[in-house]
Image 1 (cartoon, rainbow, N blue to C red):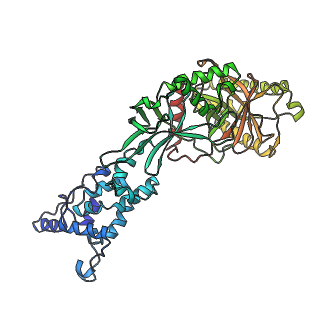
Image 2 (spheres, rainbow, N blue to C red; image 1 turned 120 degrees about the horizontal axis):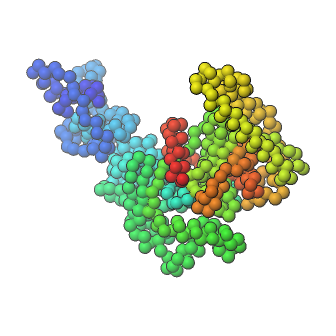
Image 3 (cartoon, rainbow, N blue to C red; image 1 turned 135 degrees about the horizontal axis):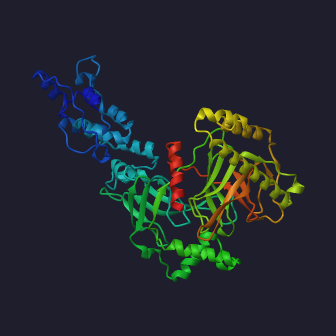
Length: 540
């Protein structure tokens, strides 16, 4: 900013060029000091100014032309300072800068501060940084400026934009906070009604923030059926915030808890309790209603990122909705980690809570399924999978035995070569083998579930691309006695995959969530891995 100050002819006292010239005549040739760089946009455009600043601002807002060059200085002389440029050109220059830099610019001199009160600048920043395309001039009639919208709404709450997982015990959830017109809205995304896994996601608003007056933004709770009411948002720390409803009576219904339960069941499951004949499923549904309704939209949210992808990935990573038996549809995040792929629960249930790794796929061990006739025989599929499980277990033991006697890397290399090249080049060899397997695999092969395997959705694809050995996490109620059991990962196409749970004799079908989430990319691979570790530790 000191460079900018020198271009403008402004000295350390934030005065005009005439004051700077006077100091030089007095023999002060000290260099300019660095001005304050406070990044609060509310400071930009404040304060008073000289008569020439008033005239510049009026000319900008009123569309008056800039003075003729002959009036501004010697004929033919190029401008030596930004202050000699026409104000409307300065508006264009300042409007192209990030909004967080403008407060520092406003501290340079009173002319800049006056120009930065121009709504044209802030209207552009709202549009380019936050996608606000609405006609902000209508809002200005109420006395709220574009600078107010940027500083007191968009900039202030920018840290809560993106994807979040609410802390609702084992159930979790998926919240997407977006700028929607002149509002910031928190949308809770819900899977489609069971078992229609290919249907689009449902969503409902939980809160919204908007600017009703110049003082500050208004937070409103959207939970319940009585319209928006008073709420509160607190940013606890980086990547964590909480919401609180200040009028929970708006969540109650005149018919009491029974009416609230029937309404929730219709919205959550798309049916009535009488339509659900399975007694265990009725218990699970009632348990979820009792547990989740006690929060009254007073929740803590933790940030989640979409998984980063690579051209070498088996399929594009992302969020999927999958069938989980009596628990209904749940949201799973598929990510790739070298020779492994992991499915992490974003929503969960009392058996396997949100945050846990529901499936793990071993990409170094593809499975060759039998023909359709033999594939219908569950015992044949079980034999193939258990043989692969034994192979994987034996390779892991050999790898452990190989590492134990090797205290130095140089000593490890000969032993690794003797065992088949599993040391430093092991990953590359496995990756190469995986690529070869995928290249040799047919574009599609017939697929059918074995007899006795239960599927909530019978409308699964009848062809698949490739299958891999994997493990799935199962546990008792309350996440008791968790264990990983063998299974089969089935890749159907770019947007669907399945998993056969061998021990449960059940099949889960997963379909991609086709929503373009904004502000959800991980800043780095390390940040994503840290996020995964955090949500898994919280679930444990």
